[in-house]
Image (cartoon, rainbow, N blue to C red; front, side):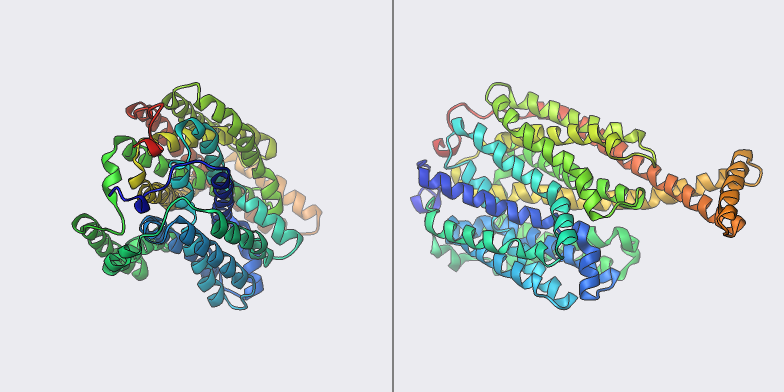
Length: 519
């Protein structure tokens, strides 16, 4: 496939640099919107009169639709060209954001959120593909930290931005904030992107059966991972049904991918050792990135009683440390072996979660400060080398499809990680509560002393001391059990990152010259 319209043109011009930065901003909006509603779901629920079961679909519908589009985007970019795909995706994302803001029922919101996620997913892989084809290897030490920063910073600050917008204005602004920038990105992308040309003949070979199978496979997988932990997994009929759909869809997807001349999803990039190992690292990064973005706010809300704005102000430290460390990582990546940087990054992330294993129910901003700083810096130390090592050795003809798979692995890592985290939190919390309850008995002198103090305090305030003291003791035991379950999760994440750190040595450094356009 050597025809010029099938590959990126690799000449670097000022116009293309500006176009690339416009694409980066579009990617930032798409990734930000994964998490921007997470801290503000109660506000949306109240505004739309939705039930607690329904409101979770505001997040789930976006994730399911996005995870289907990301691997599909490689084929669409080859068929339509980066310019047309990105401009259409940006325009649709902007329009669906506006429609989300005008929704009056939960059904409308779920529909438009799904469309928003699907179109947002079309923008993300295009940026990675462009970065590793139009920029020569010498420039990647500037470009890679930028896309690494956006890919990690956007979901990290999402709850902060969302909490601030919904707290100071209203939940509608979670979506309206996309409109003006989205229009600018659409116009800029349409006028400036000229990396490649469309190959419309591919439309005649579009695999509609493969599309259905891909949507069933990834959509059902995302559903199972999102809904499984809260519904006792296979005890729930819907989760069981979607698992069957996932398995059948997966079998058909892989069958079509390996038997068609022009598959929708091209898995051939996995023959490259760097890309295969890098994809495993991307999956792991998804667990760490989305897992900790979920765990910090959950702890602060459930144990410390913080509202969305207070949570945002506390977890903003991680985003700030990412922002500060990005230029440093860019400079290091041109002077130090990327595998060594990756090793330090993984060990740093493991250290940040290991510090959290000393957590108590009294931990606040200052106790969480150091692990958040280490986490933010470690994310950048991981993301930049993974990007360069995984995508830096691929030829341009493979880049569009590979960047979709690479980003898909990060999202799937997040989905699998959150499912495991929620399951561990639920199971271990119940176990710890049962064990702690066994110790809090009428024969325990310390428990009786604490009950007596609680009862005396409540009685002094004119309340029923005996009943109130028992309720407060039960709440204390539950809070301690919850904190202990958090610690169990942090131990698992620490072990995962520490054990994978040395696998970075399996990768080969990209050639100093080559990659990108040289292949």
